[in-house]
Length: 405
Image (cartoon, rainbow, N blue to C red):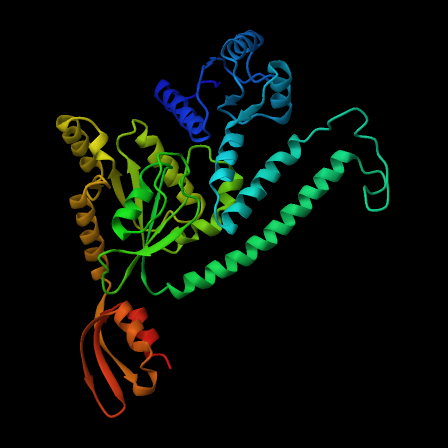
């Protein structure tokens, strides 16, 4: 159920997107209700006539839940649930539930739970008569503390506990990132379900999850390009974006998105087969600016071109894209030739940052030999009485690091 905004194309895109969100939750859409009105109804979101229509759809289709495109106020959600006698989930609630189901790592689970608790707190209401009586007691509620207040205090305490855990995990993640700071780092960013994980698997040979679902990836994965380059180029996959992504989720996942913040290059993946790709491109650009990554160089990758249509449709769209973004890459992550082209383009991009120089490694520091070969292109080596002199091609930062005592 939703109210159309902006233009008809955006409206149709949002209808389709809400359907995909429902599919990701394992729900089948049995009916859609649309209302055009200048403003949302303060109490019930839609007008009374549409409430009657919605009740009829719920009854006729034996619907188990109603999804609403916009974010509802707690009172609107409560009124609709009471009237329709089925659970109501607004857009934010749907996205949070998807994040909750897909979170795998400790960090992702903590991030999602924090936002879910913050979302739930103002929506709590007492169940059962007399539940709101104020009373005190040893080990229970404080003097004059209602059941609702107790639950809200528990939520605040849990959020504080999770925030402390997340701060510790963020420190550990920062330590890991610091070890990669001198290396070439690329981050995949883009709208959810644009094909980032498929591209990640194709470029690195990793076993990251690939699924035709929104927000299939919540945890950042870092792998080196395969075939490996010298120096290595590290590629990271990040959480996908979506229009009207709850602000709390953007802030909560900032530690995960730090991989994008510290990358030398962003690969902005766009699903060229989605008719709303321009809107999705804009959403991703806005979120990147919000997290402070708007100034990082970006390479636009128009993915899923094999799904655009016939050869003529693909040619027309390619010409339009390249006329507007001459440096963009048009590809399908399922094409080995396209993936190989992108791999070579990334290697060429970073080769301009490399310098040739010599690094002297004393005989008592030969444990650095393997690391040096992994992070630099070794052009030759010779020996003197104090150690080995390596002729390398690498970043200046890496060379200075190996020279440090």
